[in-house]
Image 1 (tube, rainbow, N blue to C red):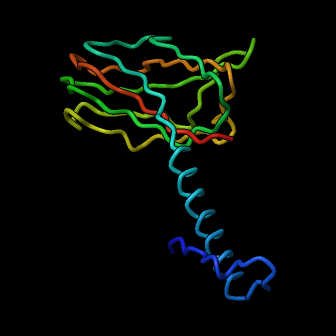
Image 2: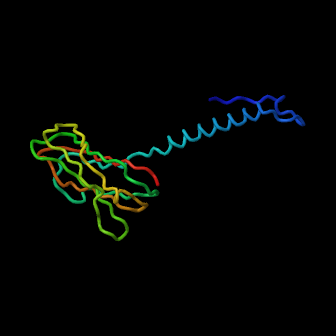
Length: 165
């Protein structure tokens, strides 16, 4: 649908408004609303929350932390991307959230894990987000823990996708 102009004759002062003119006005309004919804949908695609670990790593608690700022939402997806595979073992991570003075709790029902046999540039596909712990609020703290480390592996990225609520 595209915009249809209304001629001066169709809106002459003192002349009755024809049904055809009303239909054009409605079609133009519907088109405008449709375009606004498309723009709003595009601007609501937020960049993911990323945790990046470069170089060698080991099992470690609190390797990196970040604070959620300025929004509240729900985590909808999480992936672990391994850079360079190790010679044995597995890489497993956990993302924990902390709200106020509370304790850290995992957002996962099952954590992302990659075996060394998956090779370099492997992407996890075995994680499950806990639906009772996936909400994030302004000022929550998210922490990345490495709960399993491949021998001689190098670097990984964790990506968290979310929607605003």
